[in-house]
Length: 165
Ligand SMILES: [Zn+2]
Image (tube, rainbow, N blue to C red):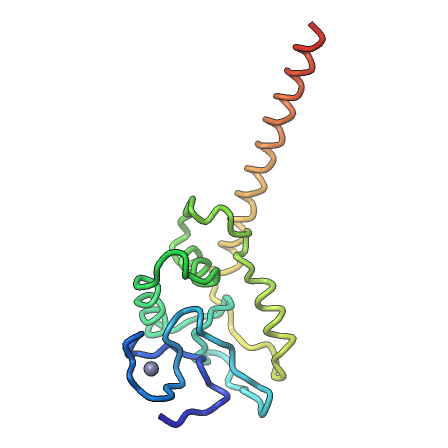
């Protein structure tokens, strides 16, 4: 299928990983997804742009359905951080298995890099809950950290006192 090179792997293929189209321009894995390639010309469609790689932007129901069906079929260790971030931002539920992921799942850096390389203006309208939910996660991590530091200090204090006895 002939495909606009600017939109190469910008969206997920509806045929899934079994797609048999020669040179299919869609992505067949969540980690294959790319932002629009603006090296030749601008990709100026802002708003609901049809970019499936998630940078915190608003997604249509159709996009969410497709991403979700890929998410469910992807083995845990192959899930890109942004897809975990999306799951978290939609559900608002913390997953203990994701504790090693940074508070924003690297989304701020992803977005910064995207904006650096894009020639058009800021690409997306944000999903309302994105940064709000990530801030909740940041706060939760901060509180955990403070608790851990306090526990360490308590332990150190009691060890020091034991030595003095
Ligand atoms: Zn395909």
